[in-house]
Image (tube, rainbow, N blue to C red):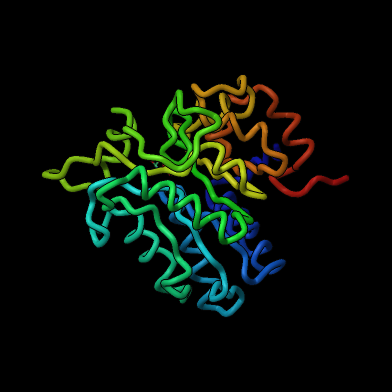
Length: 259
Ligand code: GLP
């Protein structure tokens, strides 16, 4: 695991955007796994700005969203499809047929999940998967105790995840109870994983993910098994790490190793 502790949240977002840009520079038709959530918003703002400035061209990429709520209409502003459309697709001019989303409106969410796995495989797998982390250590919507061997499937959300996501919904709306998410094994199949975590609310989950045992209780800890996982943190999210000094030595200021 590369643990990069950046100067602040803005620097962590910049480094995340840089890694995605480097992937696209290496392969213009890269297959990208996209995540949503508040932490990702500054990352997408940077990507939009780079597209507008002409320094980033996403017109040839293929994308797969990590997860989607079940039961929200696709055009609901808080569906992850609508969110990514707003945050990236409109500005990046990614052709709609190359953006893929789990179908949270499918009558058979299990069948839709299996189909999604097939689409990822048919695209040749994911080159780079962006990830956030939940306060309880979830990645995508793989809640604690999700199988480390799980594939894309419907999941029931925990009360804490629903409470954390309630802020995105109106006072009269209930945050959805179910979602389709790539599984932990699906995420681990990506050739590179990039997880960004900022803010003190993520500190405990981040410490468990990096320094705890590999355990279904902290789904993000599965990234310890991945050969090319990078975690970008701000100092608040890194606050509970025991080996902080070591990470700062290997990657001063969140930069590349001096070796
Ligand atoms: C949500 C999403 C995750 C996201 C996480 C953190 O439930 N399903 O993909 O990483 O929670 O979200 P935030 O960045 O808003 O804290």
